[in-house]
Length: 106
Image (cartoon, rainbow, N blue to C red; front, top):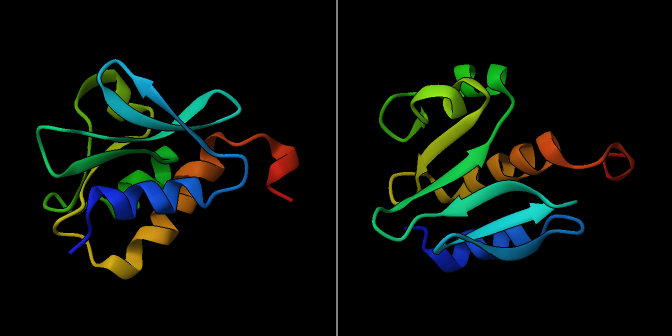
């Protein structure tokens, strides 16, 4: 089962990623843009996915859009306790690549 420490390690493994508080929760950023947050009250993270990827990956149980405006723009909840550990790296990379500067994508 994945833990917040696993999430943190996967996020910080992305090029030029760093951790910075977002209100009272940890957020992970590249070029000042958030690609992941870890929620304290629920075993979930928010990943900033491309909206098309979000639609293709949403299953209603483990991966689901955030409600409202943010969700329509790719913000996606992932219930990490339900997520197969081998999927984390790929999802984290997708979120990072969605907000990373083009120079880092090469």
